[in-house]
Each structure stands twice: as C-alpha cells, then as structure tokens.
Length: 166
Image (tube, rainbow, N blue to C red):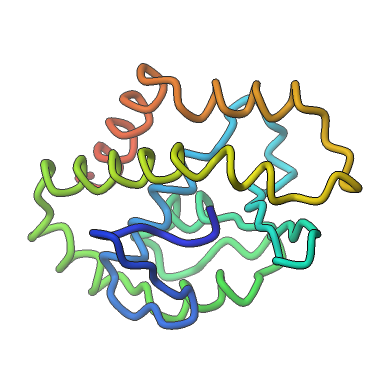
C-alpha cells in the first residue's frame, strides 16, 4: 500500500513531480483514512521490508488536501520526506491548472484499479509479515472489511471528487 498503481506501473514517492499524481496520493490516503480515528494520529502505511519485518510509515496527506488552495501549509504535524516532496511540488498554480483538466471517469477508473490491486495483494501482504509482529488476524480481517466495503468506497470517492472541484 506504499505505492500507487497506474495502469500496472508503480511510482516512486521520491520521483513525483506531476500534480495529478500528488492529488491521487491524497485520494488514496483519504480512502485509507478511518474517520473514527483521533485527529492527533496520522494515517499509517504498512509495508513489509522483505526481511520479515513491518515498516510503519506515518503520513498526513489529508492535511495537505485540506489546504490545497492556501499558500501556507499546516505544520502542526511533523513532515516526513514524502510529505516534504508533496509540499515542494504541489502549488496553487498547479492545482488550478489540474482542476481544468480533470475527467471524473478517469479518476474513478484509477480509484477502482487501486482498490482492486490492493485487494488482490492484501492477503499476500499480511502473510509476508513475520509472525513476530504479533498482529491479531481478527484485526487484519476487520481492516479488510473496512477497506473494501463498496458503499464506503463510493462515499470516499464522491467526497474527494467534491473537494477537487471546489
């Protein structure tokens, strides 16, 4: 879940320079956002490192989305390298240009592809995490149900789309 899907290709966070990609990251983060979680804690990306351990990366892109049209960024949370990359690349001018060329069906297809690919890899990701992490399987099952609920995902997409168009 630490990478984004676009027609079968993965993007590196450090290589981002297209504002479209930056907004898509924000969209994916909004999709992962649990609205019942305290606002004091950022979203977490869970990523197996390949050595049987789990890397947990804190991100807070929803704060960036909330401030897209302002010159000052919300700095109440610490910025990770990924957030710094976003902050440097996402400008008001780029966002205004982006809004003029957004096609809803293209965004919807992207969003559904991302969800579909994540669903396919979800079980393998969980299995690849070393048992020493001791995360309850019930928690993984609840997370699966939460992430892949169709009604919730439609609602998230519409919410983000409305934000992009305002």
